[in-house]
Amino acid sequence: MTLAKEPLPPLADYALQSGCFDEAVDEEGGLRPVAQGALHALAGHDLEELAVAVERHGTDEGVVFHSAEGDEVFVVDPVPRVLAAGEWARVEAALAQRVRALNAFVADVYGDRRIVSEGIVPARVIEGADYFEPAMQGVRPPNDLWIGVAGLDLVRDADGRFAVLEDNVRTPSGFAYALAARRALVAHLDVAPEDCPRTLDGLPQMLLGTLRAASPGTAAARAAVLTDGEQNSAYYEHEWVAKTLGIPLLEPGGLDLDGIDVIYRRSNADRLDSEVGELLYDRVREGRLGVVNAFGTGVADDKLTHAYVEDMIRFYEDEEPLLPSVETFDLGRPETLERALDVFDELVIKPRGGYGGVGVAVLPHADKADRERVREAVRASPEDYIAQRMVMISTHPTVIDGRLEPRHVDLRPFAFLGRDGDVRTLPGGLTRVAFDEGSLVVNSSQNGGAKDTWVLP
Image 1 (cartoon, rainbow, N blue to C red):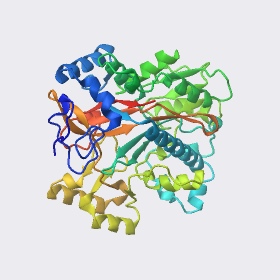
Image 2: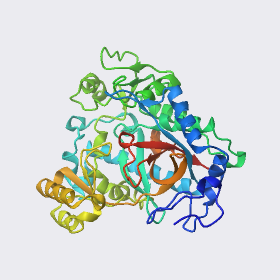
Image 3: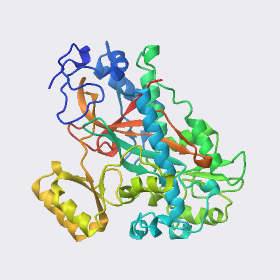
Image 4: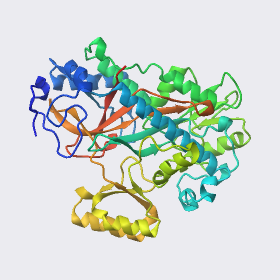
């Protein structure tokens, strides 16, 4: 299907992808009103030159992902994704509701476990989670703040409705990259004043508020960022936080905690039996040190736990969920396993402890041999996997070889939890895009990139 209305020149040959909601172009081929300002800002640009200039801007700023193989460029597509004010208000309220419930769940896991005793979440879901930490039982962080920063992955289905695909509350990353995407586009696009998005300038204060809330009783919290160093893929973000907030950037070797009230833990060594855990645990247990995010929060972003988050919201918040979760099958229940096997070829199978898109099997796109191999693996060890309904996630115009083509996107907004359940969100967050045609995996490690995300005033 091609555009039927008189489009802007860059969209003249844009072909909608069947069965998907497109963020910028409607079913009749017209521009959605919310996207008009952003697309008009592209008019007159050579798209290939624009893409190169935006990428070079990030490279010149040192915005990269680190790896053992060398630095990987943070690729920003120059076509921004735009959300209307009213839609964002609904998403923002849903994020606050969900993060409060997840924080209450972690507190309950290491407290009375009411949600287990009342039959809402099976004990095996908690105790089988990779990042469950029994030694945190009975520990109460300052202000009961377990989850300080959350980055939830949202997708939009074929009907244009948002749903939550995953909850990232252990060591979420990406907000500094969202700011980098904004700077790159502002430098190269002229946007009419009435189309300018909400500013992201409030991010440092949001993060600072979370660090203060996690501090054990001191008004002026003395904070530090704990990093693995340059081998951590998101080291750019660690440096940005330390520099922007004017706080130390520390590494585990020779760690000096004197004078430090709260640690923003960005190290991948996030287990209590790690070097970092052993260095911090006594102070945490005794209430002398706050940690964002606390040890043990990974029990809440376990992929199996995701199947129960809507029930958590009803249990802890006494409200109906404002955003649904993508349907997730607990394969540890025999009756659910059989139900999943009946529709197996329609599902997405994920290793329960996986991350970064590794090991994900999109069965409707797999060949018969791969589907049978995955089926046998799930039958042999169902507790090691989860299944989700496949969502044909939305597409967005994206620069590919100098022209606009639809590519699949998701959205990672960021929520910052403070005292008394106060939740603040960064307007929009980071849109991630899969550059390969038809790919539903948006991770940067698998040829994914990013888009600036605009929320209109």
